[in-house]
Length: 469
Image (cartoon, rainbow, N blue to C red; front, side, top):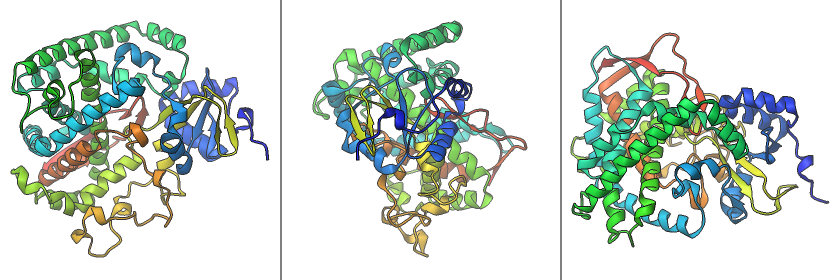
């Protein structure tokens, strides 16, 4: 049977559909899910420019990300390369692999030496600013504490606070929210026109980037005069010294990678943690379970090394947050040559979207996928509290043969998120320690919804009133 061609792939594609996609570009996750539900696991997406195809079956997601990854390249990176040309998310090939190896080894050193102590310290500082009866924005709280932790791990203590103070949150968040999958899928000339229409915002973003770059330059200079190894070494010191990570990163690559890791690590962690806090605030029983686990935490980092093994509800809540609200909600690749995908021959230079938002909410893999249900991630054994998360083979509602990439919040293959282990420890501790001290109740008529920018952010403040336990 001959392979079907691009024009045979079902899905909306007319001018009216493209206009509708433009109007709903900040609800693009919902649009992609509708397209998948209506037209199947391989469907056309109505974004102008090069052809766009959505792939949503886990087996085909795995093919794009892992088994056939060599046939796909990055796409939509032209604008990004003009801002941070040498960052991991904008480059491919040997330089990418070398940088990734250095950064991954440095992150592992930090994970084992400093992460838990830094998270406890910065978490305690953030919690100490809260007062009984306060109304707080959970996203703002999560953003602040995750940024403080990221800066403490990346830079010498003498420079970290200075770098954080140089970040204009509003400009950065505007950049992340306005540059979404629709925008990055358009031709570069159109992207530039869009930026010109909002020249004040564009200038603010560039000014903010340049200010933070100056702070990074100062941090690098500070690091060069300090001891560069040992238990208290920060990531910048490790990758500029190189003795513990197999080599040093060249100076011209440092700023791009540090800037991207700083902004990406705090934004993605803040998003997932904020949604976990928000959904837990809507379920008092879940809060109580997490609080019980959090009450077993100690101020001494070494006493908490085995704590996460029994934090079943805390872990399950974060897993469910990653399922329902994946911070990176979609990825895209470009075919480097004609490629067979299922029954279709996808031509060269086609954008292939994979979407965590779409696949994670597929009822074939998760029952009642629109419901926030941490129970699905708990062990099947009745004595759940005594079971380590490492023993949890599958959620309770899982089909026996659920495909591996039915759940892929951190991507997959050689571009798998290098910060996953840091997120796991940091978010687990912060979620449990928050509810160990506070009860939270959403304000009436406060209903944040996801906004689909580069990352998945709430479209309005997540306002809750807190009460001391």
